[in-house]
Image 1 (cartoon, rainbow, N blue to C red):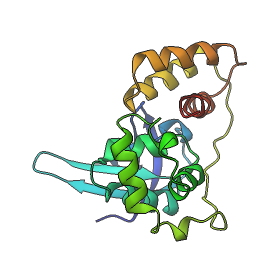
Image 2: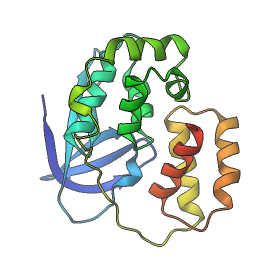
Image 3: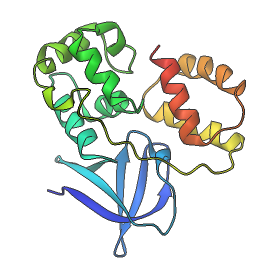
Image 4: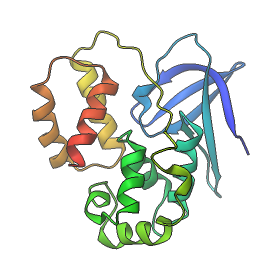
Length: 199
């Protein structure tokens, strides 16, 4: 099992990044790939690895707390890796922890693949297990450098929403709102879209 990998981001796609570690490219599925940037800077990505009969999959996180929350979500019956990543994709882990602590099932059902029963199961299973994620325990957020954005940034953000499992009608609704915004980076567009989808 891997705890983390240090390397350079060499490719960014809507559902994953490729991290070059000493000449070996690791495909790592992440909640928001556009929080990372292709470049020569070494970065640390915390890793959760799953092994099945057909595949080995790496899931990546910008902080240890984010990885730990992902693993807590995976322990809930009915939550798979794709759903757990979709929940984390909005970038506001504290809001997720608060929703669980406050029995806010409505907030949790706004994520793709999470129905009322699954949301209730999340609250039931995790409500008393998230003490380490209190407001005093701030989540570390990786900041991304702002680069000039263009329409491709919006297109990439919308493609990332599709990869996270959001429905086309929801994506089109969010797209209209985002087109009214001044030009942004893909990461910013994606964060804005996820906030709109979880309102």
